[in-house]
Image 1 (cartoon, rainbow, N blue to C red):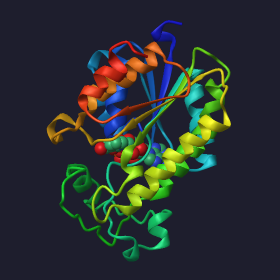
Image 2: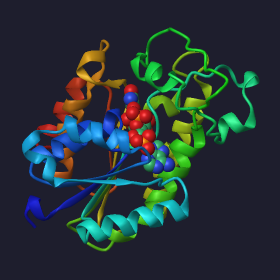
Image 3: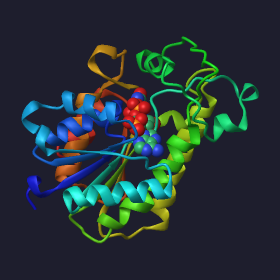
Length: 277
Ligand SMILES: NC(=O)c1ccc[n+]([C@@H]2O[C@H](COP(=O)([O-])OP(=O)(O)OC[C@H]3O[C@@H](n4cnc5c(N)ncnc54)[C@H](OP(=O)(O)O)[C@@H]3O)[C@@H](O)[C@H]2O)c1
């Protein structure tokens, strides 16, 4: 199947990691579909991708964090594109540093969406370096959705979209996960670890529960920060470079059930770009 016939659904495609992947896929000639809860983020994404590829970006406003929302988004998407050949799941959030567990509530761990439009917290969050020692106090008006963003949406969207690709060996489903799930990155980031660990465990469960599926099931585990070129810290991955590497993985394919562990920019080259797939 030619690349122009392939439709890659990038879940979380309007985010830091996902936007790099979407741009690279479009540059390679794929069609890319993105579902976001925020039409404004989809517009920013459209302005970010290469002008010549904009027509191959399919943007759908939707919420894949609930079964109904994911089903609605799927119907809308299929009306636009007819089929999905590959899925890349880059759902979650860039950073969480709400404080040590004894200062948190059950809602902080689960989900709460009391964020108000006037609050500047998400933009401050996106300015913050993931490995910076700065502690950003969360305003009372908002909270980040730990398990909701990192586990529930990953699970619900997998259940919804996996059947579209499951039975075809030319299709793929790739998870982007974070190494934050294996250790506390710094004081106050505990729930980020809990959320990221749940996403890692979910991917492990899928590999073990479904040892043989026709489509390729892959995981790219990133053990360092990812940022846009303006916000890169030492050792970080540029989201554009990561995007090219993930798009190459989708393009070339790899053995199913592979986990690619990326801890540095050099790993992108050796693991995903040098033809070792
Ligand atoms: N950034 C890093 O330094 C880094 C490092 C290693 C691994 N990772 C991993 O990469 C993944 C993505 O991180 P990121 O930095 O790109 O986060 P991000 O910039 O916050 O983007 C996350 C995306 O997930 C989407 N999302 C979450 N819940 C959703 C839902 N219910 N319905 C629809 N979309 C939903 C958001 O969509 P909306 O547009 O609707 O908000 C957003 O675009 C995470 O799993 C993270 O563990 C990130």
